[in-house]
Amino acid sequence: MEYYRMINPIEHSRTKEAATKYKVEPYVVAADIYGQKNLAGRGGWTWYTGSSSWMYEAGVKYLLGLRIEQQKLSIKPCIPNDWKEYKIKYKHGNSIYNINIINPNGKYSEVVSFKLNEKEVPEKQITLNPNGGIYNIEVVLGTGPIAHF
Image (tube, rainbow, N blue to C red; front, side, top):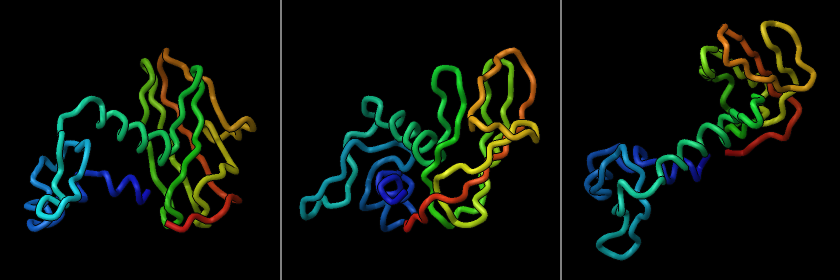
């Protein structure tokens, strides 16, 4: 999460002073941040090849943990331990998946319960259905190690 925050352009534009130093758009991922004396903190190479798509993937896949592999949906997050809950709405074909991730004990990654429409799914993953419907998924995190973010 700290690395994600470091490269997030909005983090470089939270104050007028920071935005003046950064000098590039607060909504575009910079390919690099200068480190030399008078240029230190200035962003460069914005609107660059694919950096924003990699940032999006890092946020959705590696932090929030939404994994889609071979038409199967699973949740494998790596979140700060103070996140108690978050939600994801995912559309696949004509289907909507409302995903609620609950972190009651400040454990950041291990899925201990995965329910689809209130029924436990022991495999902790489901096959996606593109043909329509609304699916409610509840994921509870539990016994994994505590993150120190």
